[in-house]
Amino acid sequence: MTDSSAAGGSTRTRGPGRVLAVVLSLIGVLVVASVALILSRGAPQPVDPSTPAGVVQKYAEAYLAGDTATALSTLSEDARKQCASYPGSYQQSPQYLENVRVELRSTTERESTATVRVALVQTAQGGPFGPSDYSTPGDFQLVKANGQWEIVSAPPMIAVCPPLMKSVAP
Image (tube, rainbow, N blue to C red; front, top):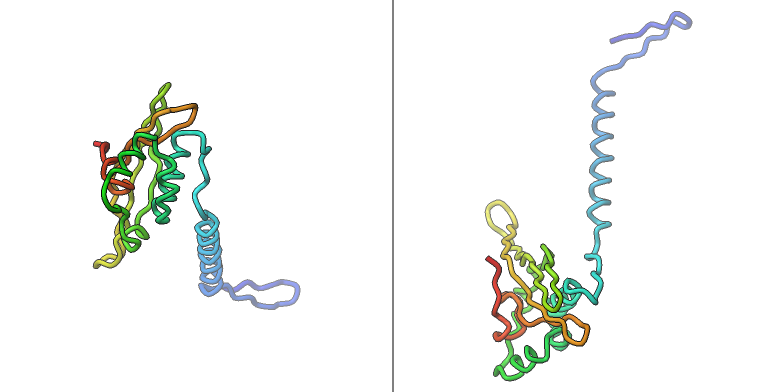
């Protein structure tokens, strides 16, 4: 398409190249914005450590980092005794744990007990269509003792010791 100017008689050409440049520029801006959004997400926001979900978050972070002592510190006294009486260690291998994340689904808090429902998401590498995520629901059961929430059972996939494996969400 040409546009003749009455004043100077010059001719400008607007063609598909200019439209294509505008479309590609918009796509570039969207890609940059998407990457910035993904990179700005960072680590999960900490939950109030005095809540059932906060205690579970502390446990899960410690367990996945291989910090058994911190994970055990979030357990009830009875659960710690049960773990201490279990022979041997039960920590999952580091290669297994690096592909697992714990996502909070819901918290049901009662006067002296609580249930924190999570999704245990494991990422499997490879496959014909790339990585895949597998999600397994699980429940943490907590009790309130001396004003603090303590874990009495954990999902088997991330239980620091077998006596904790008492609760699996349906």
